[in-house]
Length: 226
Image (cartoon, rainbow, N blue to C red; front, side, top):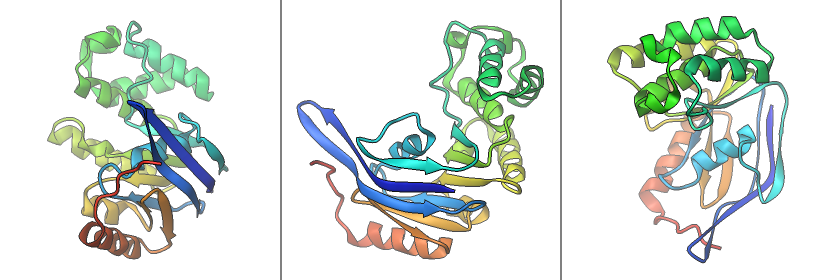
């Protein structure tokens, strides 16, 4: 279960305050795969980071039961001077899982060849994304946080990533950001719409999609200033 309690989040840019989340409150039940919907720039990725705990709200709090992943596919936390193997070993220790097993799984899945034992700074963005996805999926979480994860890599990798992610969803919940209606409908049984800094949760993903499409068609773009 993930509970958002009166969450506020603002950013200061060029002397202006931009408030992207305004008193958002919602409960995502255990075992649900929730589509997080909203127009571009509505704050979906910010909300995912708040749920993950990698970003702190200005006010309010996020309460989670069970284990929650970092945003799947996010490669920003890798140490550039360490190899993939060294980074994965560090992550395994931080999450209390077997480091050799996680390294073996990630090496096989990411399919980086000799680069797996080279520093991250030598990687392309696609290689970093493949590594991040493999490492994320190698750890069993109660809730996965997903931001367009299956958009990385070539077609073969996308197909492999999608198949693995669907397998994980048989025993876990998720909060999913995706522009693909097909992926949303395949993965999610509930939805939440983030609009003008506020969030509305729906037990039926089709109701959430309908609300989101109404927002796109009827609301002018919202400038998130305080």
